[in-house]
Image: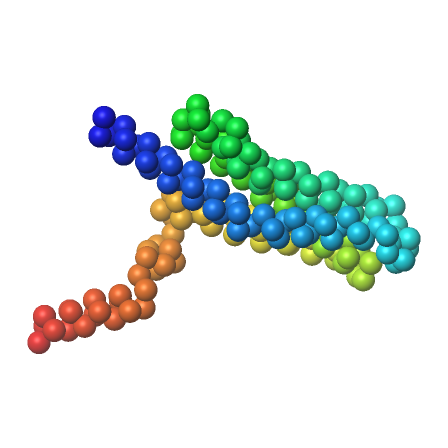
Length: 177
């Protein structure tokens, strides 16, 4: 029973950590969503092209889906918690969080495209939106996967703080003295 209890408490800690991470990011997504809902009512919105309006419509839809997905794990936890095991809850919550981040990235890059397309040539606006999407993909997906799979060195992963390196060097120098 000890190992099951430990596994259960680890699952609970992982679920709590996931819900806390979502609680931190969700207000930003909701503010973006609310802001996007107001933009069509501004005077300048009438000057947008069909392509800009299409891209803009895509942005609040993605932001709304992102909000739903990022709120989803908390709702799932609340409804299913008494009967749901921690592994299942963690798996479903993690899948929702990943999809929520993906739709958030699409919303943000769509908005950047619309704004940039009003200011610079369309090809540059597409490039800028694509670059932002690439940066988010790199920071939110590629970097964590590379770190998880051990593809990054210990210095890049930040396993040693500068103080730790200093102490290890000072120990070595004391041994050689």
